[in-house]
Length: 348
Ligand code: CA
Image (cartoon, rainbow, N blue to C red):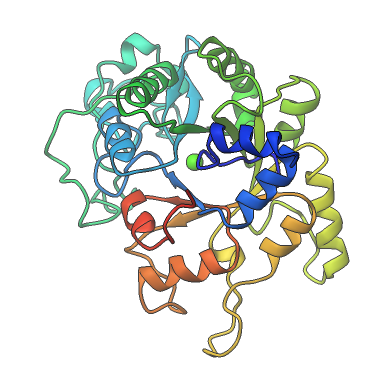
């Protein structure tokens, strides 16, 4: 995984190694063998503040995240908005502000509102569609605070500004949401996101922005048609690889090798990486991480939450330690600080 050079491989050490005749690829491989996994703040510090708001970005930066994630949908006027759902329903007061703007399916769509209109909405902690109560009851109170939607550019300027004032180099993990559906609406989020990233000097695989998407065709399109040189992650759930239920190891390896022709890593769900065994002495983590590494792919896994520790693990610490030992490259988490707390100290 020589392309993922961690920031802990400092420039002077790289230069020194060059002087004594060790190639940088060897140096970076060595660094990565010992490297601490990346901590990626899922929708900002979403365990503590309403997801994807600028305060949640600032807190994630302060809590020590290496990367901060942005989910992108386009507004009616093609502005990249950082929001997870194509609907505004579960994280904003859209029904009060624009009661007549829902579609026939009862939903209010980001794609139906201009940026100026979206600026009128207040954002709140995520609610459960069935109950209208908080999805995670102990999270930020529904009736408190004054949060708003923000654009990708606003997220970038905040992160780059904090990088400047702290001397850190926190990166972006940008997810293109529902690209096939957005294209049906006449929009092309991948093109718009690439233009925005370019404007802020994220252009090559050495720049600190990574793109991710669940849509296999779109990840390929980003590389082969839109010709981005940014690092790409193929997000996946149980359905993504479309392998038959009786697929063998060879088919899985072939599928990973195909992804590796255009992507740099995979982003499986936590569930995909857990074995079904409840016998304590059995392995609790599948060998998908090893197979991906063999195919030349990094592995970033979502979502690590202290509220939902899988039953195989007694504590959040045990979960994080087990995945670190299994070689996971990146933890996508609502709690950057809690993951960081249980990681080995960074290599210096
Ligand atoms: Ca996401």
